[in-house]
Amino acid sequence: MLTSLESLRGPLTGYCYRLLGASSEVDDAVQETMLRAFRAIEGYDPDRAGLSTWVHRIATNVCLDMLRSAERRALPWDMGPASSGTDIGVPLAAARWVEPLADSRLTGTADPAHLAMRHETLRLAFITALQWLPPRQRVVLVLRDVLGFTAAEAAEIMETSVAAANSALQRARATLEKHRPRPADAPEPDDVAQRDLLQRYVDAFQTHDVHTLVGVLADDVRSGMPPFLWWLDGPAHVVAAMSSTDACADDRLVRGGPANGCWTLGQYRPDENGVLVPFALLVLELRSGRISEIVTFLGYGDRFGAFGLPEFLEN
Image 1 (cartoon, one colour):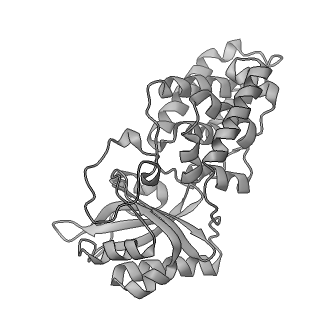
Image 2: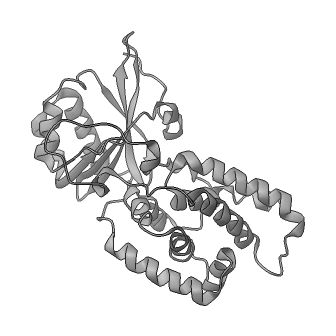
Image 3: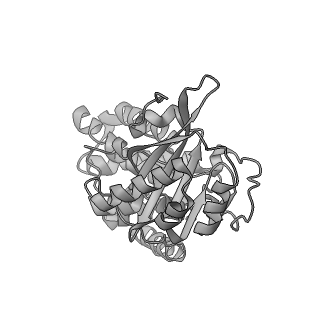
């Protein structure tokens, strides 16, 4: 039984992340769920519910407790209009932002969402859309439409009636439809065209090649930089901002492991000793052979290892 319980750690990671929107909180939520489950395992009744249903009920209560006083997490374009200048303003608290989750944290797990669904429902845009839902509506939508639990199982997990769970699901679907994410291509590591597109972006960024940079960006590209509200809309604004400063003149980009069903790049910047150290994690979405979205997460140096990125580069 304990082995079966431990095998659920992976699925719980994906479940808690979809509810919380913060990779930094997922480990605490999963660990607390496992501790509560271990302590209560003697009282588990397999005739009443399957082990997965029972454990997801515990995880749901843990996450709902964590969400009780939480603010809605978001990405920059969900919080205000695009910027027209280079003044990035002041940073907001970390608790305001959706955070990326390395796909490696789900690799080899029994996450019940199949691969195509996993890509779509782990995208930053989808996680952000979920944030528009009240916590219990978020729970039932993830249980039913992402993880495939039945109406009866979802009601058991939420400790409510099937009718109440179904009603919450209908409201959740209606709200989510209003915030439906823009389409994006799933990352394909063996896709030569995708790898070439990413490399052209890296080369253009590092050589400040404006012409090439414009060519790899979608017409409706948007680029943001949490924890700042500042974000840019369209290739002209993105290129203008990058051309207006030499702050990135000596920076290097390195391809990392996928996160949220997207490509990632680690951005390194020389420190006072000239050593290239982590500066930011870039999460990029592609669509129809162009880069359609760039989210630059500042201050993620201590998490680079989870994305397969080195802690420093040789200059």
